[in-house]
Image 1: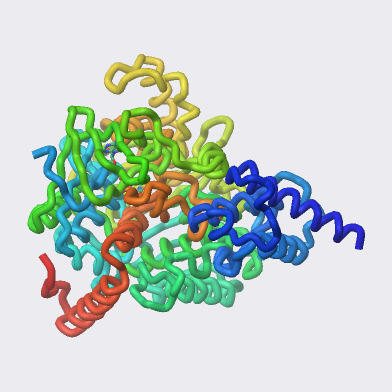
Image 2 (image 1 turned 90 degrees about the vertical axis):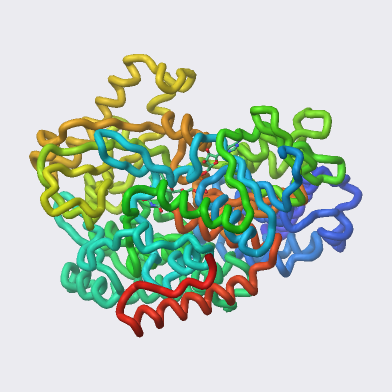
Amino acid sequence: MNDQMSLSNEIQTKVNDLFIKGFEIPSEKLTPTASLYEDLGLDSLDAVDMLVHLEETFKIKVDGERLMEVRTLQNVYDLVAEVARNAGSETVAQHAPALTANV
Amino acid sequence: MNAARTDVLIIGSGISSLTSAALLAAKGKKVRVLEAYTKPGGYMHSFSRFGEIYDTGAHYTGALGPGQPFHTILDYLGVYREDLFEPLADERFDVFRFPDFEAAFSKGYDRLIPGLVAEFPHEADAIRAYFARVQATVKNFPHYEFSDRSENDIAGTGLDVSLASVVEPLTSNPKLKCVLYAYCVLHGVYPEEAPFGFHAIMTDSLIRGAYGLRGGGDHLAKSFVRAIEAKGGEVLCKKRVTEMRVGTDRLVKEVRTEDGGVYTADWVIAGIHPKAAFRLLRDESGLAYDPFTPVFRERMTNLEESLGIFGVYATTKDAPPVDPHRNFYYFDSSDPETFFDTLTPDQTPKAVFLSSANRRPSPEAKNFAFSLHAAGPIEWFDDWRGSRFGKRPAEYAAKKEAFAENIFRAVERYEPGLRAKVGKYVSSTPLTHLHFNGSEDGTSYGLYHSIANTGARAIGPRTKVINLLLTGQSTLFPGLLGAAVSALRTTGHIIGIKPIIEELRLLGRKNESLHHGSGNADFARQFG
Ligand SMILES: Cc1cc2nc3c(=O)[nH]c(=O)nc-3n(C[C@H](O)[C@H](O)[C@H](O)COP(=O)(O)OP(=O)(O)OC[C@H]3O[C@@H](n4cnc5c(N)ncnc54)[C@H](O)[C@@H]3O)c2cc1C
């Protein structure tokens, strides 16, 4: 339980970090319900960069088509958590290349 | 003249740019191609030495049989001519030689599979399953199979999955793995990182219809130019683009060339490496323009480049020692973990590719023109990066010669006596490619086409600059076919792709039935 809590905290922190530093979005805008496209001003090209960055940061591999489902910041947290869980990733905190295919 | 506006300006004249131009022109757009070099074609261009014509990057290609995708695209554009191409051998067109065994691919799955099963009798199930997966996977690519099956553009199945992850569960036979991985040489990506989908398209295209170019890629480039000009387009050489000036509305306003030309258009397509394209961006006062987010900038900085290739172009004093309708892949090891390693510390090549420069020598030919290619990263030639082509020091020539001899030695193992027959040869390095093509780090295949850089994750075709699109091998996958197909995707953003895909599908069917019906390859041409 604690592990799960810390995992989801870590995911939130790192995802928010990406939005603050990587997309230069003010932290006060980063509410879980914020829409990536309407509220945070991302476009579809940014969404791809987000995907690639998340894969590298969390050492996960996300099916590209799942980007379509992602509308809000909470959706991003959930997607990362789900993929990390399924991959049995215990090393979420590590920085590592994203190329180890999870098939 | 310079000031005349066109609908679309296209930077570079590689096959992706020429395909874009021909397609847009055929659809009524006024197009202008700006090429830095003295002739069009990019890596498709050929050159002559010792009275022979050699190709730079068009040694062979696939899907060129009647009704097959590449054939259909070229025919649709009015570019296809039967005398441009030479079919490779039906039996064993690609021969893979390893220290302890040999295998080959033959044309068509009905020849290929029994051939491989004969080689690997205990692996019959794995072989059938692998090629069934290849065939099923390529059907998901609408720009290759011309179907409307995939709604999500090219990012369909097979691109998030690595080649190794498909092969590993099927077989533990190291030799068979080497054979199924052998085409990694053609894109330069390791099996663990190569998107299965693209490897499948390359494999499928070659198995279905492998052809060499007759008389060199220049003829194909010229055929493109004729088709473009026939539709009112222009292909201008010696026009190096130095700047794209972008307004505050994020639209390219002007494209400037080294010779002082200023060009305007509604759309700009850059058929060059994405990094090179972005370096050309300026604001309206000529200062560097950067519309990118920090995360994208970081991505571009970390982007890996593909393989640098070293080439040897030679003639023998003797009749051909190998069949000019076949290619030969010579491998140094049959360990699937390393057989394709590109960065051997002692700089001995792990894999050498031999192809004939003249696919149709006369039966009495007393000589044989061929090229050898092996990985040769630019780092090995770093010391001479600052030197100019034609003025490079003797040490560079000595290094090239030593490296060429390494390659000959690797081939001698399989073709004893070949070196002694070689009269003259010249060689090329990534620095040569940098000089003639301007490719990033002199690589042959553009950016490194790992899963992280392809499909849904690819750079381009769209960019943050609204009317700037990218095309070319870096945006999809390398090879003449990959670069040409990338142009379908790119131009689709301007003219809409669905009706074109439908027309391609119909034309492909028609050509196929004409071929089967008449028994010859002489097709009625619709466009051109
Ligand atoms: C050694 C080698 C062997 C290969 N073998 C094969 C093979 O056997 N089969 C196969 O299918 N593929 C092969 N390839 C790969 C294939 O050649 C390429 O994938 C394909 O030709 C790339 O096309 P492109 O349109 O993406 O770009 P390119 O062909 O790279 O064209 C880019 C063009 O842009 C021009 N340019 C660059 N900067 C500017 C500028 N600022 N202004 C104006 N113009 C500019 C360049 O001069 C060049 O003409 C090989 C490549 C190499 C190098």
